[in-house]
Image 1 (tube, one colour):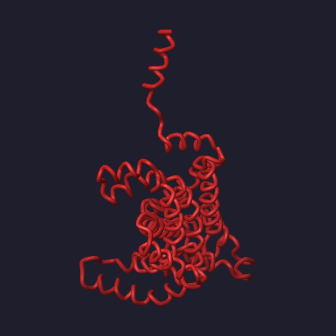
Image 2: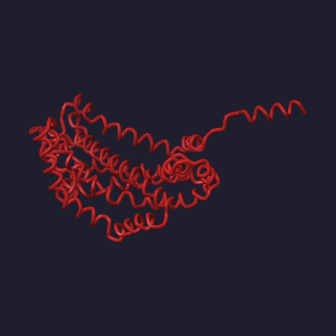
Image 3: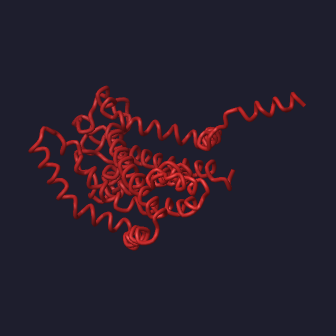
Length: 324
């Protein structure tokens, strides 16, 4: 009897693992999830450290080798050269950096900061605030996403670029326009305009359920402020679907950024992007004469989109209680 009681006390004293810790333990047992995370880590690290890679590489992304124009992959240019003699592999590395910057900024500002905050406020306060936020989202979503994104990018692009040039001329921030900051801002504004809607709806639905829970009633009775209830008590309990949605939306944002650049509304030359590289190599004559120009950017774009989508499926499996 004493032995049984002692073991029960030891079991009760044993620290319990949190929900996210258990989810991580289940996630690392999935080989496809590990493969996706490894692929994304490699691609994103190449993009983040593109200046370092360029420093040690023999060619820059704008440097032209007139003796190797339209050359297939070889020992000097592992992915070949384009129509102007530029190294395709280095241009893909810098194009990945463009994709990394835009997707992270859009998800962090639109999907997470704006979408989560508006969803929490709409679901918790309800009534007129809820109606105002949700009707605004429905107004945006009533139109084709890509059409309005193109319209916003085309309308605001010139003004934003003029603003960046004015900042560079009147401050010490030299090279701001050359770094592509204006193009990053144009695409980010266009994508953020729609990136918050789906997240806000998801979080609102979670809040409508969680705000009737006993722990929220206890927090209200204790005099806890509304921001603390939202971000300390409710948000941690709604984090699982948010993580899944963010991972799934990353692939969609990569595709949207590529489409905008492909249409000429994204990052402008000489800064490379996957969209412009696919556009240059997408013609029938280019496919016949220089097919390697399409191979490297196509593989990079395909890897990023596929890895994020498969990782989102894996996260849904480990975080969704119905699929465990």
